[in-house]
Amino acid sequence: MSRADQPLHGDEPVTSRRERARLRREEIIGIASELFAERGYRGTSLADVAGRAGITEPGLLHHFGNKAGLLLAVIERRDLDSEAFAMELLGMEPAERLRALPEFARRNRERAGLAKLFTVLVAESLEPDAPGHDHFVARYRALRAIVADTIRSAREAGLTRAGLDPEVKAAEIIATLDGLQTQWLLDPEAVDIVAAVESYARTLERDLTGS
Amino acid sequence: MSRADQPLHGDEPVTSRRERARLRREEIIGIASELFAERGYRGTSLADVAGRAGITEPGLLHHFGNKAGLLLAVIERRDLDSEAFAMELLGMEPAERLRALPEFARRNRERAGLAKLFTVLVAESLEPDAPGHDHFVARYRALRAIVADTIRSAREAGLTRAGLDPEVKAAEIIATLDGLQTQWLLDPEAVDIVAAVESYARTLERDLTGS
Image (cartoon, rainbow over all chains, first blue to last red; front, side, top):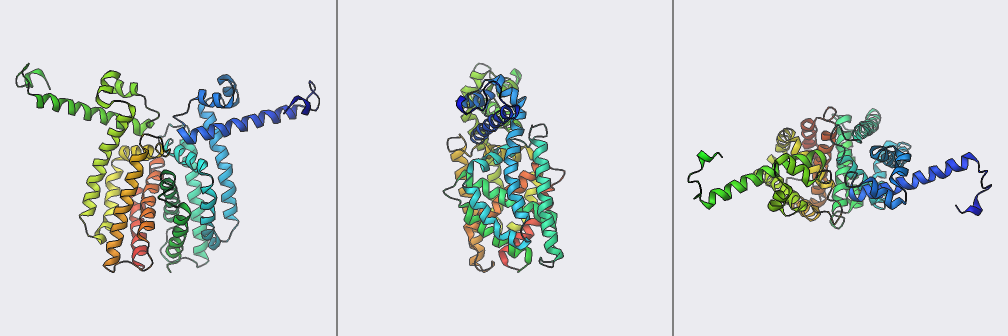
């Protein structure tokens, strides 16, 4: 914002200053997300983030407290994004949800940076004392519960085959989508993520309905 | 080896000195593997490895050239391990292979460190310029080819349903096993890897045979 844009220089409303601080914070989170996706959380220093954001390290710490605080802010923003997807999915009929998977893969393909960020951060959070650990444990538990619920509803409506364990199947579905994403990120020339998810959605439909 | 064990001190055979150097190298690779599994490749410094191995950094560099050289030695050793598994699997009839998956999961459960090492190193190798990148690209291509070949043989023997694409199905199978492993490593209390793989082997049998 140039000086001329500021409504009353020297007598600026608090909300506008707050809004600018919020935007600056968002900008730094975006820069940290890019660096974490490229080099991982462990491979990125606070100095790297500060340098690319044109801020001092103390300035950075003022916004986020410490490196783990910056990580949690990055994770939180990524989650807002995937929650929007999840809500969209939950708004659909169970049968439609399966058909929507390739559409999500298509969108994800355009957002390889976010997908990479997620894959790297999960792997860096396996150890119980890693800063992202509790977050990802809770996230996967919630995700499995949502998918299991979807399967349970479909089962109650008589849409699925007998002998299906919703919890186990939920873990399996999430695992397949995660694993395909990793193979695609590693080798996009060899793995077409949209075709792979389209094919998996058909596998899943046969598996769930027993047809 | 104590001095008393040395056959002819001062006139020691070259092979024995070579053997000791080889054992020392193996020991350092083991230590680096543990550290990489715990903290990742990026989160581990050469000083960390040297410190735990009781060697100087120049001594470490003498064995491995640089940090990437150490990583490749760690990956190579892990691969010897998983190749032994793969050969065992390839020695079986296609139908038996499916039934062997839970047994491999059972063994893997006892080797969480190796599983963690693999998950972390793949995620740290997504970028094309990462030191492990080419290795993991080649490994996944080879793995998909082996699994696809297995499916193709089963298809030629009339054991699988029509309309199965061996390449796509191979990517899907590997993805599911990788993804289940990640969920288990992150949250072993919530995800029973052996039960999950047992269930997936049944899913896969139904899927492949169309039964």
